[in-house]
Length: 93
Image 1 (cartoon, rainbow, N blue to C red):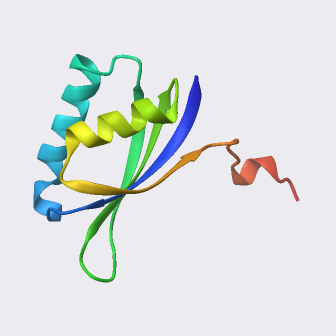
Image 2 (image 1 turned 180 degrees about the vertical axis):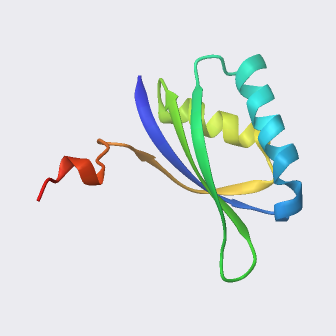
């Protein structure tokens, strides 16, 4: 399974993100069981817009984009295949 980072720009405020997250989880469970949602980073940019950076396992990018389309309320700014992960522990001094 391929791991993806999905960058999203939402059309709703930070106060509505709990409902968005609940809807995203519901879609994964009911319509996209082939997706695993690992976690998301939620940020508010300099313009006050909510952006998320979500990590998913999915069989392909098309499935990730289909999930995003069903979720709505946002634009997908990018879908990136994750080549690997590193932590500071990976670089001993």
